Length: 120
Image 1 (cartoon, one colour):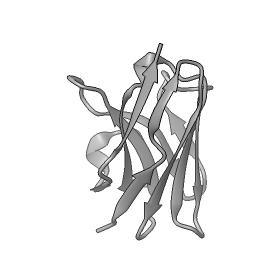
Image 2: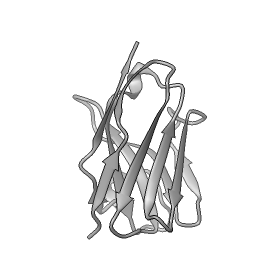
Image 3: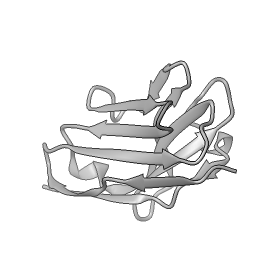
Image 4: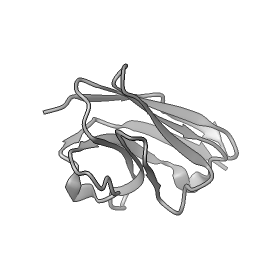
């Protein structure tokens, strides 16, 4: 089991930026960010494999950047040009799957989440 602790959430106005971090007790092959808005299902945002292959949801492509520091066992998500529809609880997750997709069912370990709120 992997313990994951997110940080860096907050409130900003539309067009602003936020950076999220996730400290892991152990590293998995694939690490990802998911988000869940009130009344909606949890959805994949971005994922990165240990070889730094990345996958992004269409809604965040060109605005969000996922990265990882394997030495520090830390996952990052840089979010730019934020929109009110990006408002959600953001979760860090870990998976052992090689293809490293944004499929919620493929992730075994989850953090507690950090809130991101974007005002218009």
